[in-house]
Amino acid sequence: MTEPVLRIQGVERRFSSASGDTLALQATDLEVVENDFITILGPSGCGKSTLLRIVAGLDQPTAGQVLLDGQKVAGPGADRGMVFQSYTLFPWLNVLDNVCFGLRERGMPRAQQIEVAQGFIAQVGLNGFERHYPKQLSGGMQQRTALARALANNPRILLMDEPFGALDHQTRELMQELLLGLWERQAKTVLFVTHDIDEAVFMASRVVVMSARPGRIKLSRPVDLPHPRHYSVKTTPAFSALKGELTEAVRAEVMAAAAAST
Amino acid sequence: MKPLTPVSPGARVALGITFFVVFVAVWAVATLGGFVSKTFLADPLTMVKSGVTLITQMGFAADIGMTVWRVLGGFLIATALALPLGVAMGAYKPVEAFFEPFVSFARYLPASAFIPLLILWVGIGEAQKLSVIFIGSFFQLVLMIAVIVGNTRRDLVEAAYTLGVSDRSLIRRVLIPGAAPEIAETLRMVLGWAWTYVIVAELIGASSGIGHMITDSQALLATDQIIFGIIVIGLIGLGSDLLFKVLNRRLFPWAALGR
Image 1 (tube, one colour):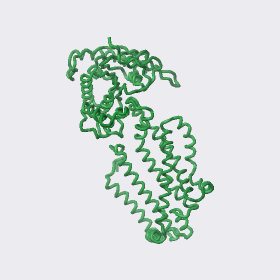
Image 2: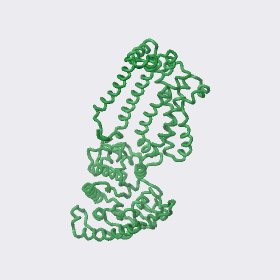
Image 3: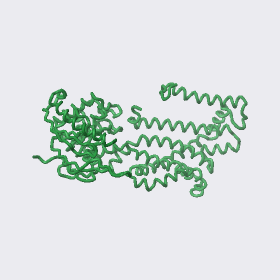
Image 4: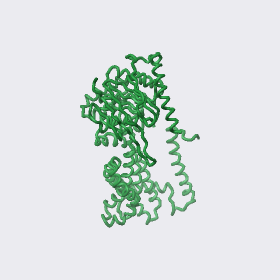
């Protein structure tokens, strides 16, 4: 058994307000090993984004801890690259400079920055768009740039918070194939939050289902569909069976969430 | 006309010019047609003629130069000090909590009301004119810059942190470049206000400048000269405004995209 890259230990998050405490995330444990592609699936408001933000260091747990390679996570850092649901490219930088952002922060010489950035821009298929500003790009292209920007930093783990959620269906499927292809070639470790079951099953090596608020991990299901995965896998019986199982699990939570809010 | 439907650039310019023409036409009819007494309002032709005389024979160009110099001087000093303070207030909440209440109070102090005090403190020389403009623009600038910097999109800040920026580089590489176009827009607006302060400063205790010429003309009841002075201010203001707009568009092409 290899030492996990990421270890989430008893992480809990409470939000306090005037009307009282809300428990968003119950004590949660999760281990992510090298080259895992874990998708976290759950109804909206189940705390899955909160969990990811805690791993990123953008939010602090009220109990428990997150360890990256055995080191306690205290705040955000370049070792955990993140792609957000909203478009977070820096609008004043063109595609090339956006991808160079983290490299420049590290003090890498400009020529080397460009070389590295060009490589990742090519991998996400944006050759020829280096001088474009974010506003000149479609949503899909912006998210591809954001992916290249996160990958250029060579993070230990890539955190993705519903990164394709704002894209139309067709673009989303292309992005899934792109990301999966990158992962198959480069042996990255990915933690991916989504509420789209198809998306979760298609890309994952393991799907984690979270319960309705207060969130906790309800189910952890390995996905052993063969690699390289082609989009046509979505029509196979094995895929449908898995999807059916997860749909049931998520549906129960959605019902629970609906019942709790009435 | 449908609400919010854009107008073509050509039509926009044409409409803008048309109003100027209508304005001058109404003025010409009212004065040349004898509806308004010359004592109260000079007609456009007399105004232009005395404008030419002012510039060619009475050294009015030097007055204009003086006024422009004062505005720019006072404004640049105010900007140079307001930028670092405003950015610091926008970025660091304790700094904001420390200065913000006072600045909010100070910005309502009318700059022109300080003139008697300023004459007492720094005399009637250039320092007094610069101080009036400084007081009039500094506090406004600080507050607006602080708000702009404070309103930086949080998701961009978070993205920058996950890319490994330090707190210092966050200010240099995210807060400032992100706020720059809006700050430039604010500078353009406040420069417009600085123009009104300088004239007030020059109306009292000045021996040169457009405002001084206007007070002199008042004694002679030379409404043609007064109007000429006012129009010159308007034209310079319009010019500097256009210049600023062009400059902003050049400096921040990304901000104008897709607008």
